[in-house]
Amino acid sequence: MNKLKNLDEAFSFFEARTNLEKGIPLGNPNRVYRLDRMKALCGAFGNPQESFRSIHLAGSKGKGSTAAYIAALLTSAGRRVGVYASPHLLNYRERFRIQGENFPETAGLSTAQMLIKKLPEIEGNLPGEGGATTFELLTLFAFLLFRDSGCDTAVLETGLGGRLDATNVISSPEAVVFTPIEREHTEILGNRLKDIAEEKAGIMKSVPYRGLAFSASQHFITRQVIKRKAAETGMKLLELPLSLHSITMGQTSDTEDRFSWQLSWKNGNQELISLSMGGRIQANNAALALMVVRELESGFCGGSKALTEVSLPGRFQFLQHHPAVVLDGAHTPRSVAALAEAFIRITAEDDDIRPILLFGSVEGKDHQSMARKLCGGSNPCFREVIISTPGTFKPSNPAVVAESFRKTGVDVTLIPEPEEAWEAAAERSQGVRPILITGSFFMAGEIAGLFTAKV
Picture 1 (tube, rainbow, N blue to C red):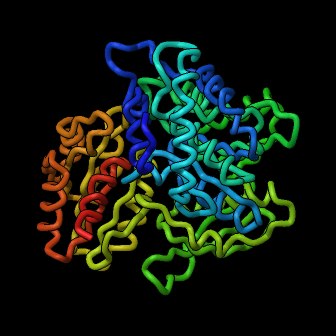
Picture 2 (picture 1 turned 120 degrees about the horizontal axis):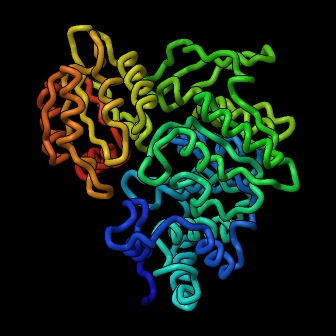
Picture 3 (picture 1 turned 60 degrees about the horizontal axis):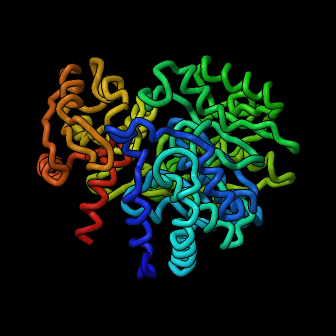
C-alpha cells in the first residue's frame, strides 16, 4: 500500500478485512474467534500490549462509560492513560483516546503506516485461514498507539465476550472489571446466561501480583461464575454491592447537562458526584470506577471533578434541549429500562405531552424484552413508537422489531429509512414533544450523523 494520506485511508484498509463485528461471514465458517492469531500478530510487533499496565473490562452494558470514568480518575491521579473502546458512533477515531482527548493525527498516521507496511510479511505466517481481521488490526493499532504515545496505562474494553476476544492477549492485567452481564450475542456466546458469563469471565487470569477483579451488581448466576473464576485464578474479587449501600438522586443541578447523585458507602462515607451523562446506571458506573481506582491508587481520595468532565457520544447525549432530543446506545432490556426512567424523569414536565420513541435494534438482541420494558404495562413510558433501520454495519430486521412493539399495544410506525424516520419524529414532536432515540449504538449513530451533517 502506498503512503497513507490520512487516517481515514488506514481505517478503510482495516475495515476491508473480514469484520467479525458484523458477524461470521457466510460461506466462511472457519473465520472464528481465536487468540493464537492475535498473539502472533502482537509478537511480530514486539508485544506492545506488555508495555503498559492494563485495566480490562467485560460486560453487556456500561463498559464505555465505566472505562471513561476509570481513565479520567487515573489521569487525575497522575497516570498517562489510553482508552480503547467499541463500537464507535460516527468515526473509528472515537475508539481511541489518550488523556481523555482524541489522539494527534500525526501520531496515529505514523503508527498506522508502520503497521500496514509490516503486515504483508507477517500475515503469511499467521495460524488459521486468511489475513488479520478488522478488529484484530484495530486492537493492534490501539496497542501500538498507546505504546508509541508513552501511555503507562491502558483501559481496554472487550469487543465481544472476553475469553477469545482480541484484547485478551494481555497477560497480566492490573485489574479486570465486570460491568452488568446480560443475555446477548447468543449465536456466538451461547444461549444461557451461565455460558455468556463464562466467556466474559475468561479475561480473569492468574497473575503474579495484586490480581484484582471488580464487579458491578450481577444476576445470581453471573455472580457465581465470576466468584468461581476468581477462586480458580487467585484473583481478589471486590464487588460493588458489598461496598456501596445506596445511590440517591442529589439536588437538582443548576444546568441541564449535569446530574447529581449521592453515594452512600457501607464504610459510612457520603459522597456527592455530578455527572454529564444521565441515568442511575451512570451513577452505578461512576461508583464502580471510584472503587476500582481507589483500590489501585493507594491514598487516592479525589475524583468528583474528574467524573464531572466525562462525556461520551451516544450516552444520554442531548442533540437539543427544547424540546429534549436525546440519543443513547442502550441495547439490553435493563439498560433501556434505566434509560427510559431517566429520560421520563427529566422530560416529564407536563403529563399531557407524550414523548416519542425512535427505536432500532440489530439482530441478536432481545428486542422483545426491550419492547416490554419501554412500552409494556398499563402506563407505558412510550405510547408512540417509530421503528427504523440501525444502519448497515450489522444485520437487522426492522419489521420483526416493529411486530414486537405492536404486541405491547402501543402505536407503532415502521419507517425503514433512518432520515425519513427522524423527519417523521420531528414532525410529530411539533416543537413540543421530547424524543428518545435508542436501541443500539448504530441507531444512535445514524441520527447523530444527520445532525452532524447539518452543522
